[in-house]
Image (cartoon, rainbow, N blue to C red):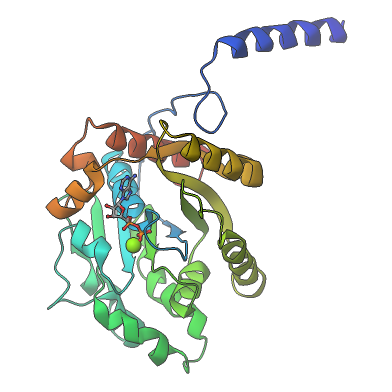
Amino acid sequence: MRHAVATTDDTATAAASSHTELGPTGRPLREFPTPEPLNGHGPARIIALCNQKGGVGKTTTTISMGAALAAYGRRVLCIDFDPQGALSAGLGVNTHDDLTIYDLLLASKTDPREAIQHTAVENLDVIPANIDLSAAEVHLVNEVAREQILARVLRHLTGDYDVILIDCQPSLGLLTVNALTASHGVLIPLECEFFALRGVALLIETIEKVKDRLNPALELDGILATMFDSRTLHSREVLERVVDAFGDDVLETVIGRTVKFPDASVAGMPITEFAPEHNAAKAYRQLARELVARGAVA
Ligand SMILES: Nc1ncnc2c1ncn2[C@@H]1O[C@H](COP(=O)(O)OP(=O)(O)O)[C@@H](O)[C@H]1O
Ligand SMILES: [Mg+2]
């Protein structure tokens, strides 16, 4: 009897899958449900966006996913943790006369809430950075518990937010180790380009070391394929290799390549506000829903 039921189910599944459209990662395409409204806020889950390769979409993802989660009623704080300050610029906030993350790392007496700036997007706040941050590694290297300084700063802020996103700089140095030590999860954006996988082993090794020595609770929240161009065989092959290597850690949502992103950055706006109906905005809303569905965000 059991066997007969199983056979029926298998047949049904096979029949269903032969009609299901497969997404770019080779899994059936599906919509993730719209997140339920939250009754209250906090404590925040902290997610580091990390890849020591530059130009893979860390900052763009922090801004766009942050704005999408904010639109779903999540209270979001983005931390600019790159001295280039691209996150701050992309959200249209000032980085010159105001407190930055650097000030908070160096002066433990400053209340971190004083460094928060509101953006034009409701529920989306930011702590900015500027070039000062490039001196932080040198200053922090002789501190006691130098890997835990950001974690200590963020501890004062988790109660007010549902999610805190840390936009890391392209390196695996002390600042990135601080970000990984402060986080519950890490999200790795990977550009669908030939050298995408180069360096990822080292990144995973760094994450494992931090988990082992400093932050046992750290989880890999997912690998996000970015700048995917479905028209090129090359992009599709790279994505296939990424899925072969990382399986279900690869998020189902894939971000396509489009010039709308640079346009949005120039305007100092998230893509979800700049061109809400563009496929790129839809993709980041889908990513936000996928992370909620996976439990990475409340
Ligand atoms: N999906 C995309 N398609 C096209 N260009 C993109 C995409 N995502 C980001 N970009 C652009 O690529 C450049 C690098 O992206 P960015 O998010 O700053 O990467 P990172 O923070 O990893 O250095 C920026 O000019 C950005 O506007
Ligand atoms: Mg960046």
